[in-house]
Image 1 (cartoon, rainbow, N blue to C red):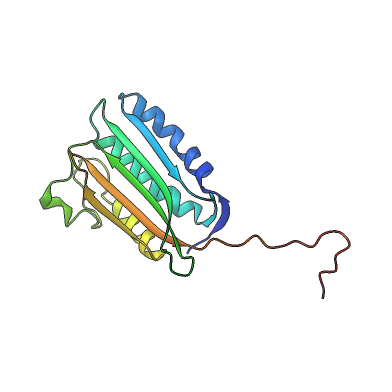
Image 2: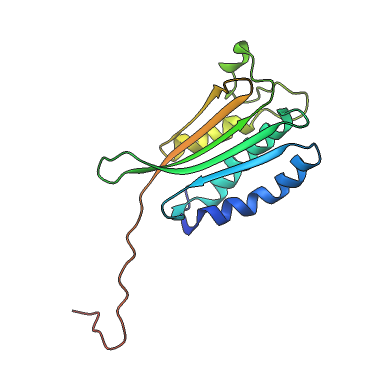
Length: 171
């Protein structure tokens, strides 16, 4: 079930990143963030976005060697068609990358390239993207590593006019 609430998406993301900065810092991994949203106040499913962002960041940090870099990009993308916009979340790492033979199975349930974990994280993230009418994809990062891009549509809602004192709202 999709439960969307209005909130400042960038503040929400910042609150999620703090523990990952500590985790990354212990291994001298630099966690960079790049934000580009005209207005961070949007309707979004907080629980679903928490699952996606924490899974993608956790995987990126796990697979990035000590001293590497993980970059998080958050942006709103406009299609230009009737004001349709998409929320774009991208996590890039400087890890070893994903072998060609593993890429087709990457989003399958119970598939994992590591000994710990159940292999459900990316499968759940893709399901969340599809449930929201979006997509999750993986591309090799030029120069090594992986790039995971999560894109879902959203509609910017106009601020409704609240009647001021002395204004009749029943007309």
